[in-house]
Length: 112
Length: 113
Image 1 (spheres, one colour):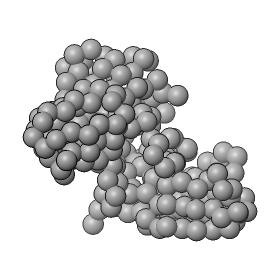
Image 2 (image 1 turned 30 degrees about the vertical axis):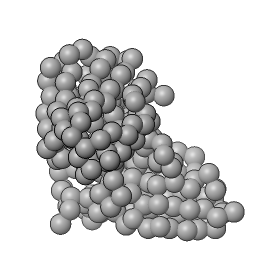
Image 3 (image 1 turned 180 degrees about the vertical axis):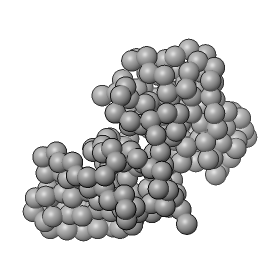
């Protein structure tokens, strides 16, 4: 079993829909959880960062972490065509010399 | 903008030739990373550095070497390029504070023919 699993999609939704993107993981030591957004032919950009369990909201974006289920989610409300991108989850054990482990990314298309 | 510059941005090279990709940062970050990204594999860590002359291998380090002789530059070298090394390469730096968040450069597209 891979450390981080992420459905690659593609996921296609109409403009204005609520989007749910998810990752599962196997390592219970993960404490730091991130979501990156990557537009075509660009580098990934940090979208959300969460430490341990709980929710974090930033505008139309909400990140959720459920450590008991080893499951993280990113919700996008009122999705826009500009949200069309690949979304990657990432996580790590601690804040030391530990590289992030990435999911393979989910490709999202928001259709106007 | 994380102050990362990658060069070259695009390169076509022949099998068997050495290739060096450069990552330059302007904000004195200690940690720097090289990833490759391929369809079906996602982002995979090649090598990383936690200081000048301090480097370590990632999960796909075979065929690659790195050097960091000064804080601002992290070089990735393909000793003898192969077609399997055709990929997009991303440099990243670790941000100050906020856990292990990292920030990526714009990528270097390498084609080995």
